Length: 398
Image 1 (cartoon, one colour):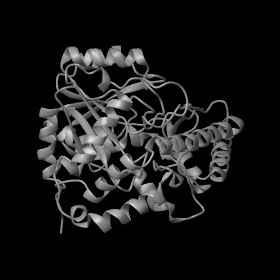
Image 2 (tube, rainbow, N blue to C red):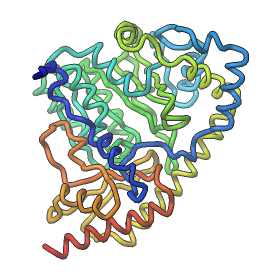
Image 3 (cartoon, rainbow, N blue to C red):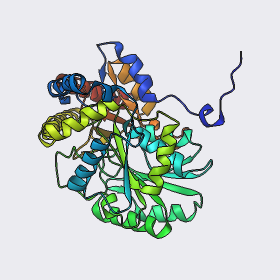
């Protein structure tokens, strides 16, 4: 039988990252392709103790249906942490608990965008968000990132010639995949441009708690006086990715529409893990736990950068992140990126091709994304040495 798929999904392609995962069952493959938190970052013992207590004393609440907006104690704890940590929480805002940060992004687009509307994104950008926008029928248009984020002047010009723009999607802190952080003056300028034009900003900040160098910068949401910023984040990188819990804070009318949209998707996020997360936040030292993760990633990032510095040809460049999980590595024009990715995999190292993160699904970019949070220290050193050798070999044949 021939199947005819919907227009919204027919053009979507599988995530290259998820497809790469399928090849990683071979234990000999060193993966720099994942976006996973380190397994060393999971507070397994504490979570086991809290889980046992929940099942002993509140099993029905943990196993029954709950409210779409999220477990009320957890919503309160999240709102308190956003105020304390990021100065977020203006009058008229509302918070919803989502099934991972990914769902918050998709619900925002579903609530605000019609078929054919435009979402302006950093280029390159998070593939999960790009696919979420496309699945809602929105068109993604890219704006190249620089070392400190997008150029506000170019954003202004793009908005001027894009009347159907409904959202500006940004990962201003430790960007995925670029590893870059938007500077303070650019944040102010971008907010002012969108405020003046009445354009909603969707600020995605799953990595903001993972700064291991430099000083914190204010979130775009903390600057929001007009209700134009939706702030999305997640527990995936600071507690556990598998619990699939995120949250979004934004103007109540928008979030209320997201609640309605969520009711047609999953009714509510996993209530057991919401209860567990609330208990962890209020009964354990979350800040101390995050400090341990930051130390771990500081060391892993430094190890990857040091190994690249010692082995990679000078014509290969890469970002030097101050936090987050990723390094963006740009190849010289003389090295074909797809050929490089395939050759690296043949040598036992998996990386993500850069075109995966482009708004134009047919576009190309001569870069790859590297992840340092998941592999062991030994694999980081060995994998980077292999990547450097592949690059040197390809340059020598030119």
